[in-house]
Image (cartoon, rainbow, N blue to C red; front, side):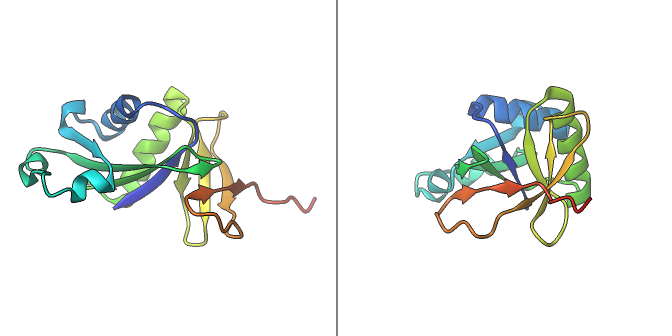
Length: 138
């Protein structure tokens, strides 16, 4: 599983096209859905047979609009991260991409180079994510 955030509100179709570009597969091979729809008894497991990526998206608040969870990708997390960063920078789709074990993220697609930011853990509101740039000591 690989998780990342998309900063600005874009359509589900735009998320699918973004992932197709990043993962190098056809958009019809990406199944984008919500956890609720995936857990619905009427959901067919057959829908998962021919995909290159299962994308679970959730609307969130704060500095991001979407939380994107990726499953069933035949690539390492590092490969996925690098591809998403590259397409984010190229298409100027602003994302927060995890880059360390202590709430560190790269803010990509907003400037020429990715910017290191950190998730603010003091936020108690459910489904709300805020990111802070490090405070310079110079």
